[in-house]
Image: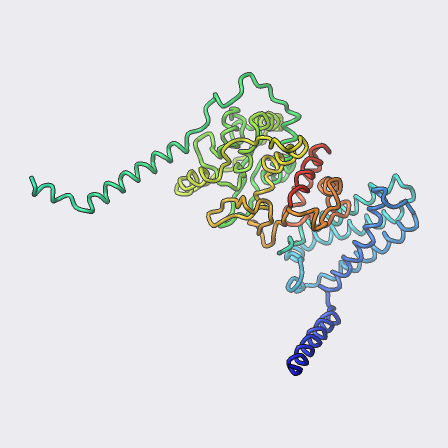
Length: 150
Length: 301
């Protein structure tokens, strides 16, 4: 009984350890670009809230967040090397077969993020946010992101 | 005499049964191929082009019928589309006389939308989602037709190719797949909910992707909008049930905003798998319709 319990505990510990090791090993372009996307989202959400009036407009936050988004986008443009289309990723092969179009949308997104950083009044915010979200996020995901799988 | 009666063997009976069955199938095929008559149209109907435009965007016609090159904003057809078992090229539905629907009569359009029948009697394949459009009201279909007639005619020949056997089988499949009659409001529900249900079932044809299908490709109505594998690529159309319980959207207004703005306002996963096109089309609908759709969808457990 005790032995079984010990084995079970060891199993749990091992499973835990394995999970940890997996997390530690989460490097490489796929994990890095996924982290970049998460960071972009967490910086984009507050700006959307400002557009919706759920959060007061604050030019300093807009500038800071938009600059982070621009930097993360710039970094992720380099995180799609050849061969990083397999594994736990929703990147479509078209990223590599239509790489010019992919890079063009990336560049548009970077440009729109930089424009967003320069927004100084609340009435400029909605169009700038939607330009980044529409011509950046949406335009790219429409063509280059696989749908989720159950 | 007795000698003669004895020659009636079991295979004679089998032959007779087969012949009868064959005649029955042929008869049924004939019946299933009869188009709706002119009398199916309301008398003296004056179509509302503005409402037709609304139906055009609710249905997202442009997304499959999109033209090529200079005609990218017109439903001039000609783009290849992947479907299970092959590839199709959606036809030209601009009002060109020779290559489009310029010479179609309103009854031809009604037959296409409600019965999946072409003016020449072709049984259309269900990539053209008439199985949903059959829920649409006659007036909305005629308004849509009137709107299509206002578009610039584009000369673009897109031949429709359906194998004879496929067409034959389709006649029977359609008999099973087509809803029995256009949508009727559910009495216990309010006008907004009913409008939403109508837009989702009929013109919006959401069920075609979001509802799983059974072995012979019929929508599984017991799992209505419960999510399904996509037919055009790897991946799933997500479930639209329990959106509220799963906290996918906060409330009706939140889902309405999501349909209106999509990822432009940070609503994730409304772009991939063809949904980006759907959302772009839906964004052209008036707020009242988006609210109706959101109201209906948020009510599904």
